[in-house]
Length: 496
Image (cartoon, rainbow, N blue to C red):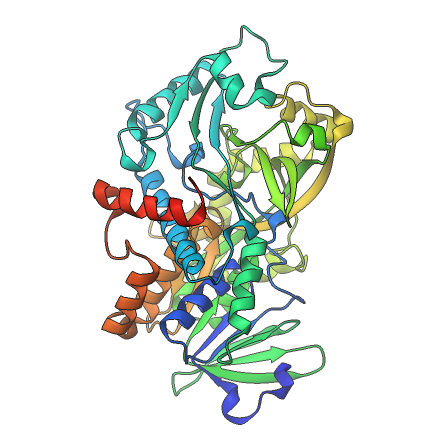
């Protein structure tokens, strides 16, 4: 049924979710589990789900648990390492694992369709980075979440972990690595398609592909009127709640909504590129996600890593990402996206961020000047024996880095941010990594902000506790609970 077929009472929905990626599908599935009779409409401008940021080729595929991503644990001036963000991200990812375990236990999903167990490894070679990695290990290893982390400066041990990274390396070069064996590779595109299939089986959920949101208008009766255009017609629907989970396109739609909370935001697009190897012999030699340290000024999405990946069920090997720039907010977007997003209320913030983040601008310029030989040279810092003929360049997805106006001026914000209207009738998701990995935690934030009355009911609380056994508890503060939750997850999802 196309949007043009919706008539009368069917034009009114309890929730309209914009975008058919991992975020909207996660929220829709949670709402459907909590309130099966809820009328939900999911709108997607492309012809199918997970074709933008959620596509396996457009993201890192890492279950971001802060196991190996060094940008989540910055070095402080006193020589210690800040690990609170890493602990938070890890607990959020555990909620995703809990949710998948519950769906698996109920026979609704098959983990092997989207998830593989894969070690997460941090690898460094400079003296200052080795000192940092050791300090990071010493602090993180004390926490229950990272108690299984291993550290080594022994080239022989590290070669057992990641032989491809060590073969051909100068034997006199100092190296260090940490390993978390309980890591994952996740095809978020496949997961999204699984979610959407489950949703489409429910008569209360309607999905409209090849349908674009043209306008968002808050009516005097408190409802949102959403004008939609499909392949041949323009129609309007109404909803008491709107979620904007449209990846890089969320900023433009947030601005279209005209909620005051959205006026503080601007965005700067950054594109990504991968080197991809499809030589079976090489692919079989590597079995890990290996993260290094970001270059000065590089955004988090540009932390270099050599990854084993499963994309649409096929095993491959990727290195990158390399940053690029164009003015699109989406891979399938318009070159006018950036210019249309510049408003009088965010222009000064965007200019200020550009001035204050000259290292980022310099980094992007240097990336734009790279050719294939430069990229292969970067690869060889991870894989010394890499041959140019075995690797090809592929364009990854677009990301829009958040620029926010604050009392201290414009700031560039990394990570993922939820923006909600004061009345809870609209929520939008901005930003990038860790994004998809912590989608369940993010959607719980949306529910707590926008569905306050429902979230306080015994019915929803009971259902949430069944879906997420640790819900309402602090995993990082209760070692016994953490062990029980992980044991359950490990057993159901096949970690052991």
